[in-house]
Length: 126
Image (cartoon, rainbow, N blue to C red; front, side, top):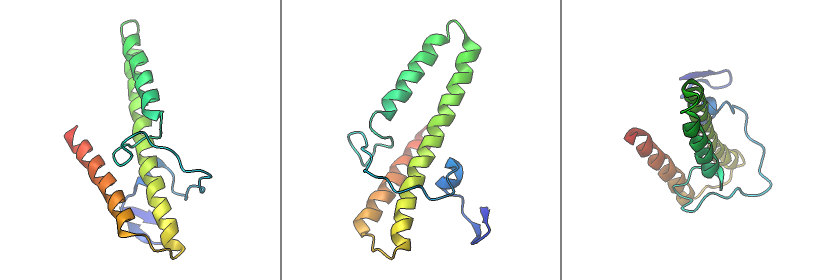
């Protein structure tokens, strides 16, 4: 639980973890997710960028093992922060719709819950 001056005690959210407690600005165009959008957690090309950086870290281990471990820690922290941002952005989008009084379809909510369920399952499988 976290303290919110306007709402009192509330559950911890992905925006708390991502450090994005303020609603993100509306996107000018919809970001593209990698193929398999229902299960993809990163924007198109992001995962490949993380994998490229990971390969460089592994290669650097031979010459500088300590530096490689420090870089690995930083990369893992960055990926975790990015994942929290992805879910925070999704939740903020839904909350903006709710705040405007828009009806959100059960299908949209089902897709959102399915993404949470898939990610939750991945976390527990680690």
